[in-house]
Every structure is written in structure tokens, then in C-alpha cells.
Length: 193
Image 1 (cartoon, rainbow, N blue to C red):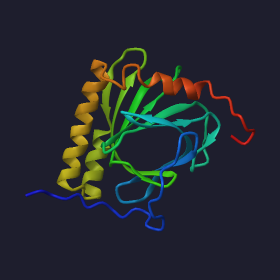
Image 2: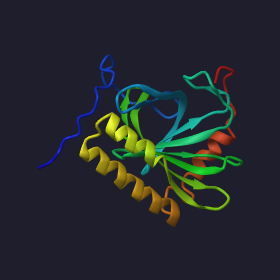
Image 3: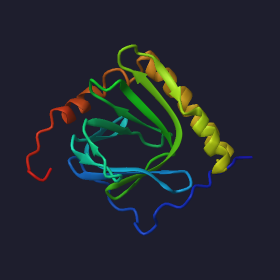
């Protein structure tokens, strides 16, 4: 019997409309599975390709927490995948940091998803690939009553990413660099950018 994923409702005050275009400002809204806010920040839609939509987070960006983000990064939001990937420039210790998430939903100029705690990262200097936050995943699996299909999808995404980050599968080898270069060398054309 197929088990359906019963997701908490998204903010239904916003009906889906046309997706943002390249160069537009977008909002990244990440909750926990129970719908409580986890992280949020503005970004710039850099473009898209076969891997998904690429978002740039510029230095000086102010996150919803009030924290000023000092370093830029690029966030890859793939279509229909149970993860996102953050690509960081040096000297950040993690070259790639992947969050296991529910599949992203685009609502106008917002990308909305739920963080499922498991993370996979690749260390810059050593190239070591690490699966982290497994204890947090198990705690929240119980606390939020993750459905079996969600647990299966989360672990499948984590295993896929462990392999892909280790063996040089794109976009984790070099495809991300063109997007990261855009953010690192960003020169605002408008003083309000």
C-alpha cells in the first residue's frame, strides 16, 4: 500500500502565481516539519539549469533572525528533490553543505520548504564527506511523528548525497562554480541592491 506524505499546510494566503525570473529578489523560507520557522533570508535568483534553480546570497544580507550574513554563498534548489545544496567560497570550511528537506515549493517569489535535520557536507581541505545531525533527525522523527515515507525519502537523499559529494557527481564537482563566481564578484548596479 502506498503511503501518502501528509505535510503540514503551507501558508495558503498566497496562491501560486508565476515564478520569479532571473535577477529577481526571492525569499527563502525554511521551517521545521511542524511548520515552526527555522531560517529565512532574501536571495537573488541567479538562473536555472538542469540541476535546478540557483540562488545567490550576497554579503551583508540580513536574515530573518537579524543576523548579518558576512559571506556570500549559492543555494541550489533542485526540482522535486529532498535536499538543497549550499556552495561556499573559501575560507569557509565546508565547501558544500546539503540540507535534507522536503521538496521545495515555489510560491511567487518565495521558495518554501521544511528542514528535516539530516545534513551532508564536504570539507574543503580534506574533501571528507560527513553525514551530520542524525541524532536531531531521530529526535524530531519522534517529536513531529515523521511519516514512514518521509523517513525513507530523507535517508535516501542523504545516501545519494554522500555518494555524489564523494565521487564528483555534478553539480558537486565544478558546475556550481560559475554560479558561485557570480555571487563572489557581485557588483550591485543599484545602491539599494
